[in-house]
Image 1: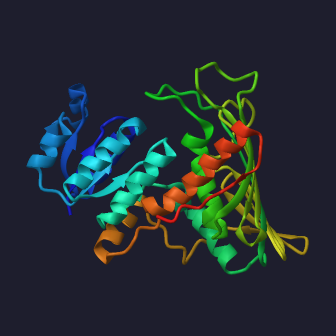
Image 2: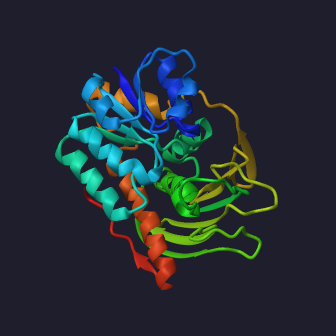
Image 3: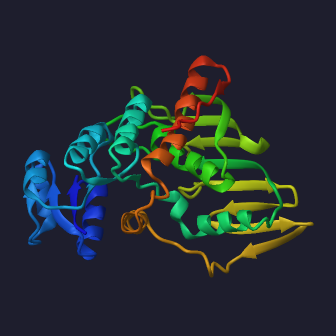
Length: 320
């Protein structure tokens, strides 16, 4: 299989090396011709026009690593040519637009996956296995804390939930196997934060999920104290114990005894590209398909509404 890579920025270059090293690269599209220098003497075709590339290059799928504001345009262009798409998150910052993109992919039976990578980390897969094995009994609650200082220059305004929190919300769904029912939230900018018009830097949310599972979430991208990992620190409570994930270490607590989990044998770990390729070969829906990711984006969408209204929001889980 061969891919057209669209976007050769910092994230795009990482994808470029991955596709090149696995012999999957057919061509590169980047509107800034100066970016071609990153390719050095590599022989792959380089285009500044997506339409030109789509018209001239034979490919099986497209990898969309453009600015989020361009995601929808690029995704629809790929769909117009019948290509499967692996897209960096988000589908779109606009929830309705995301729904429309997912609906089209489903309607035209075009594979569409979001590169949601946090749930693919080895220790995250291990936590999921422990939960599924009932090591702490029935899951009852989850508490997530995320603190980092993350002031970066982007072509769009950074928002804590759109940029980072969506990963943590995806992990809530992944660990629990449950969809959201209601959410309360407060999104705000603390006094120590930088000033950027439209930026939302801190978040607090409380979610009620299916099966009586609850989740609390505190996050900041202007934190000046000890930083958490990007995946956050977790306390997961069950009816027979708890799992704590602190600085990427897993501890299981039962009957007052603490067990450090170091054996990850038997845990299948693949990255987003490997999962996407496997889903194409096997003719199945990818684990973080656009349809599945939309359910995570719904949590973000209704958390924003809850913050704006000051009222608990009932989450309408998309059925696309």
